[in-house]
Image (cartoon, one colour):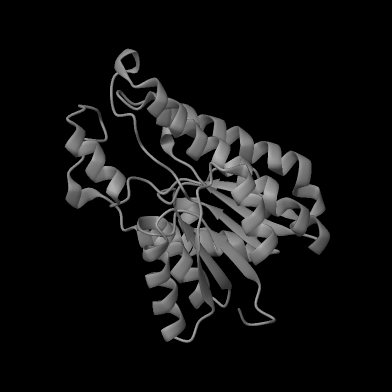
Length: 248
């Protein structure tokens, strides 16, 4: 990585919002580490960004593994910014019929994974006098959806984790907020529709889904500007005030 550029770590960077956010941060001048479980996909992204003249590296990482998270940050950090984007949607089933192992895995990735990554980067951010942590959230954090109990619970927990990070580290210069991307056109939306679960999300026409690049641009704005208005909050890319602030 090039010296002098602030470092940013993006999880779940193999596709969708994570991939778009990693690219947007690299193009905004950050030295980006694109992390995901499938190394070949983030290697492809990092290579493409380097070909454009940007600083980017790939990292194979399961955020649910705390030891792996700490090792990754020790070896590739310290980071000025973290985008906690890694997440899964399943199990896609009524609560009483859901596979308990899939339920536990959803919480391990979406909630514990975000905690693992935040805990790993915070010491470096504190030593540097600040940083930014953006947690990809969802309207499901406070509005339950049929067949998505695990996902909704994980996002509700993530919203409180965001507030806890702000409470403990906000005054010391670490900006933390959630980011609600709306219903973006990602693989998660395909999974919901393929599952056969009938809920308000599945009934939205695919041509009405948002470009994941919108959330990526919003994430770059939050990382760079660290706006006090949104500290510990969960701005939504569809909110007119946030759109105005972020120039979306």
